[in-house]
Image (cartoon, rainbow, N blue to C red):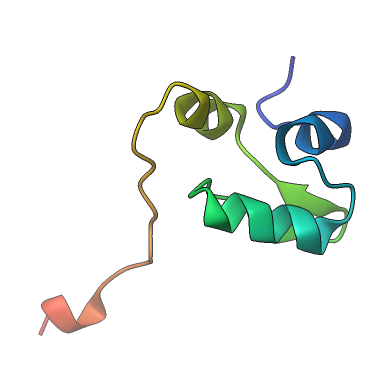
Length: 68
């Protein structure tokens, strides 16, 4: 088992085969993901946390304004 969901697992989770539809579904359900040239990358841990009803935290990057 790898750290990331396979394409088949993403289809099972979202019900969609196309990356754009999967991305929309993941965003609606608060599951973090990234894109690369091959499609979407979803952490197995994030998917499991969602299934368990745990809150997902989104990292929006570094707040450079807070440094000043």
